[in-house]
Image (cartoon, rainbow, N blue to C red; front, side, top):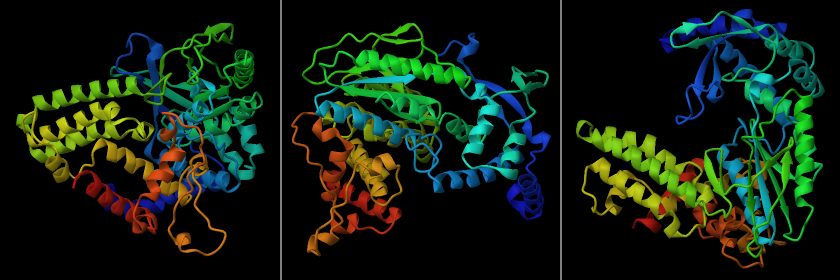
Length: 490
């Protein structure tokens, strides 16, 4: 209906948006939100109010207005290099997968260098809801946002209100004096700017970090003989806690997780790391942006949990399979099961085939379910008919796609830095082959082949010349898939 009457609506919508931006004023009707509490995890206790996420339902026009401002603000920040390069939340070409790939790459590199590492996953309590408006506006002014643009943000944050809807009942309207709405277009970007100076605090202690919105990951690698590593990390956490208090944010020590990843030759160390007078105990595994990371970087727990959840989904789909057509079953399986197999599968690059075999068995079972075939049916013709690459090929496909984007500047800067195009000192025939330079790693170990910086050049240089020199991403994707199909299924 909206598409049909869009020629009549667009002039009025454009007038409202242009008037709001030019005058620096946001209509009060756009600043009213209806908050719908949603459980953070399906397995969480529904009687505990802390397990709910307050998502704000905003008006349609307000989101269009926010999107227009978001595009202009993002352009200003990117052109002036004002964004934190280690912040991957809600940015073009960035994702949870690229963020996790950067973290695991650094952890693998530390093990190659015979270093132990500590990964700390900070947890904030109600991060978006406690943003101080005055502090945020002063940060925007320091970033060069002035005049009517700054007035627009001041109007956007001022006099916001909300109502809570729960089980068919709606509360009275309440004033919102702090925070940015969860569920808004501008909220995540404004929060990223609000926490931009946190990176300077972390870097001053020699620690590395990576963020995705309000999820902050701290990394510190050190020789196993370093006896002061724990005190350095504790001092950094103390300064982070002070910074949080100054910015009206609150760290949650009970949900902050720590993983100690030892070097190959080093025994387990007892690290006494403190956060707000609470000692952080190392755990064997931790869930990070939807992926379970273990202290051996084997991803065995993640693969086991993923296989279990996919089997449960296939079991439920099998129960209703008699009532579904082949096409409907394929759509259901691809959206519920195959999408889970593809999520962050680049982290599994270089693992032995026996480790990822449970995922291949899941894909085989999914193919048999679509065609309603018995358990031991041969799956190669089924995968070819569905145009599905095997799991190992899908991992390789994902890595090479990221390598292509990094090579052509369409990937995050922290991935682009991991690959180096081969350049010759003079004009040679090899200059036109578009190869990558393999990193000179003299350390031999079982983890050496699992680095993105090692895998991408090796797999990339094995591609045919016409694939490596593809002029567009769509052409590269099509030719790469054809090449992998011939290698794995023919």
